[in-house]
Length: 504
Image 1 (cartoon, rainbow, N blue to C red):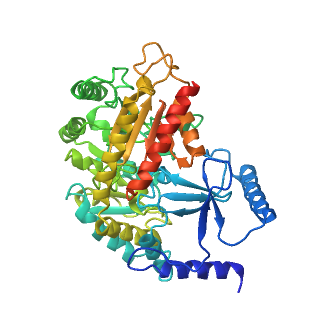
Image 2: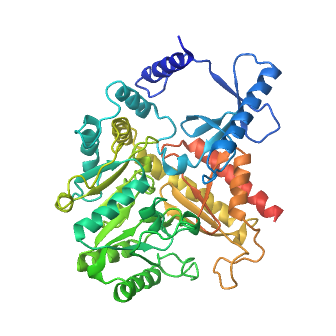
Image 3: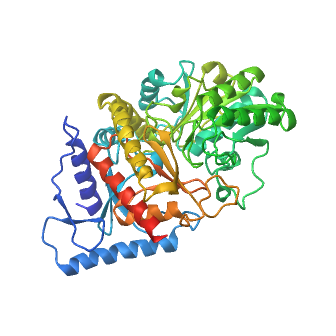
């Protein structure tokens, strides 16, 4: 039997042998975790005997794969590490060079149920032997409709009853902008300073978190205006500025934009993340979202709520906007929706989507059957495994650990803010690099503190990411992470912070 067929058969058997316990059974030789090098991360070797020459050959192979990638993968892609990820299991990933690491990145908030969740993988494998590609412009397919059936009861507002599934969050943003313009007959969009919505042209135009995403690509889509998000650092205000004052300032600026730059009758939509993602993991105050809703209702403007990163339990509820009880006109979902399978969604209400011209929405791979089947399994797992209960418990533990670190005299003023909800948490460090009026300025702070801490965590066996233009590290562990693994990650983080501060 050809090697590829043998591997496929072995994988299929492993997936199909999943028992009711949710544990995948496989006859492949087990792996033993062994600290066989003077490196601070775990190394994986097989249980069988291996000669030193065989181990060296494996390393050489991994090195050659990296070199091949560096030569042939476009330079436009950035990477956290120059390594080849080979396997994911729950809260851990294993690299070709043998490193096994605790993953607090979840593929940037995608594998919310951990890597290769058995029920999700089985659902996708089962769907593969029925139909893989049932093109949405040709017919309905079962997983697409079953997914809608699963999502309807958990929508943040019962008015959200019309669904279009696509592949990526950026594509879903593009679709929402098209919908807003066609439904309202208006062109202009108001976005948030610090907001991130994607790298395609429409999504890039409403992205205001970093210039790296749009630098060199102008002119972008026209008709986009930005207002300040109620975030103390972006507004240049002290961290103890009241929420009321932050919201008042931002809504006042919205009023000015509508009077000075884009008249309400020219404005199709306001787009907002209820928690800034790439902008620094900053939750929007409920009063701000309610203020946006009031303005939209007054002027017939659509409110687009981007829950690509904050959705599907990430912040302790299925959707973060539930905390404010604000009704979106259009809801954008992706990332955790299918736990790693490419799938996004644009959800609105039928009275609005009935105004769309048939054929104006679509895409070759939109609403792929395998991805939809995986998403159905994700919805089932959330309910059956009480994932939101785990988020609540682990969130409390994570915040307690981070606040303890903040109170440590050795860390002191180097941590200026801890914020977030559920398991979407950020730590913002002080910096010596901004202007003398910057509210996070601490002249004695080490330079590049966040990126150095993230690198040190990685050396110790923890994948964790920075975010925003400021010194911010974000925590996005699996929503079903165990108490022990969360504690392990918090310990690595605390050790890394202290070591980098000592180094100065």
